[in-house]
Length: 340
Ligand code: PHE
Image (cartoon, rainbow, N blue to C red; front, side, top):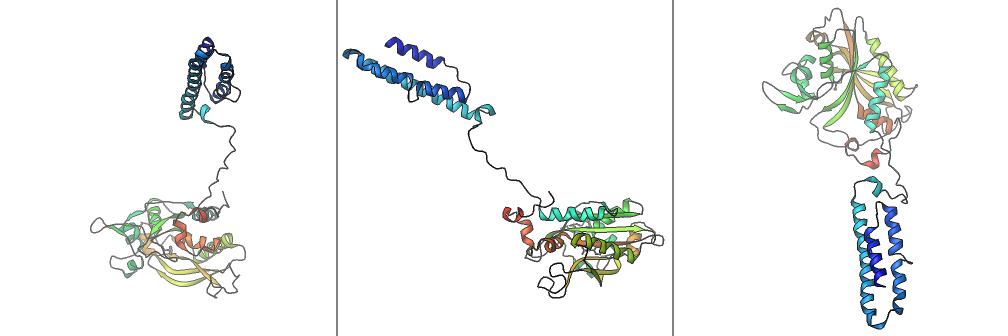
């Protein structure tokens, strides 16, 4: 009996166990319901009385040894970095959550695609801007009250005045400085204004501004381009109307409304029963702006427009609270799956 026990001790120590399957085989052999050690226990009754106690202790020791080896190897395999040991192929699979694109990103891409089809390139520029590109080159004189229209976040006051850009018109100045006309480009990007955060206003939002400069560009070209955009974005029945407005960098300037897509212009609380929704600002580039970037305003003319991406998304997805776009609430974000 003693010899048998010693033999099994050697066996237990000598078993090579390299993976979960081998460990399971070990468990069945030495610790399972019909294991080898149990067989020996059942033979204990045949052992003479005087040595039964000693053999019983040896058997218990054997059982503990098997359990110990099992625990040690199990622990090793579980902590092993090798994938082979860790994959439990019997576990049911967890479904992988598919991410979705942010609604602003979807709308931004759609705007870019619409203008790409009529030859507009995409230009980008810095979010921290100097006074020249955000204001002066755009015909805002130093003390012009129009600067107050933009509640600016200034970063450094004084000589090297820097600010977070209040619109992406600043990118268009950079394009005009670096490229010769004809220029046909849109500049999407994030802009900042010092506004109290509410459902209707935020301290940052996203714009897409457009610029077209060539010989003989007219207001009719502007109107037609914007009508094309409105119909691509909101459907072929969409109509636009222009109301006179003011921007320092365009003359004449206009604000553009699109016919209410929600009630088909019948009147609803989104369009405040007017049948129209304001979507963008636009105008003919002021000759002073062309000259500031060394473009001859007697030879070239151009139009510009600017829209808020949140506003377009609001109309497309009927999301009325601007704050939702930046709160990163997955329950909100995962509703927008189109266009992946
Ligand atoms: N830059 C203007 C704004 O941020 C929008 C605009 C762009 C208006 C181009 C007219 C022409 O409000």
